[in-house]
Length: 285
Image 1 (cartoon, helix red, strand yellow):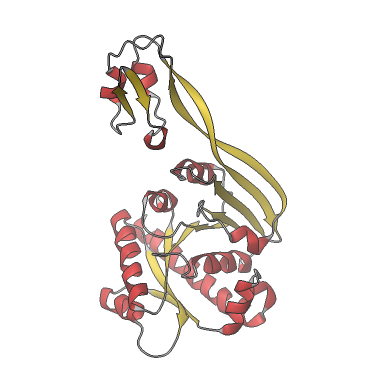
Image 2 (image 1 turned 45 degrees about the vertical axis):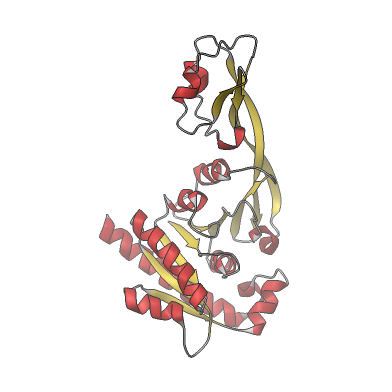
């Protein structure tokens, strides 16, 4: 079972929820798809870490063979090639590595080169297999790294928690597309409700079953809770605003491994998440 954990922005508590649900499970995979700023491994401090680089294919032109026919330019739907000053220009940042331009070149002036854009690291922390994607600084897209993270074999029936990038961009879409269930983490503010609405629209568009965890919960006015009630969204749980939890988190500690109180809270939350996910899976099967 794959559970994706999303939030409309960073700092909402998405990684805290993902890490603690993974740690409190009997056995789990934690997959950090927030490849621009992965930080789940800072909590787990995994052992036996192995790294595997992630490469993309890019076209390279031999100017001595290129005759300027522009067939490659006409083929590319992403405008990654242009003919400027009697030379073929390749814009690597917007190339989608499909390789079509190379196949269509009648003069064989285009060939393929490989570029490393980041890494996938795998390690173990007690009951959790920790998988982390790391995008090299300056690279334009982490989608190839996320594809590699989620392509690797996940052993059933182990539960997997996918710590998604913040927001609702293409990297988030790639992270949730094969998820069985989505947890939306929200803060108790107008801005939090706005960000919740953004990811709510995304999971609805993908047709994913979902529920909300209200983080930093305080009694009183809570725009995110009001949004859930107004839209009939299932509230999976409320994690109270608590200095102890904030201190554990800021020190890079996993709350459920440090505190019986939080072990009980996240165990209860995990039971509810699994029950909801299994229920939705049966309904949609």
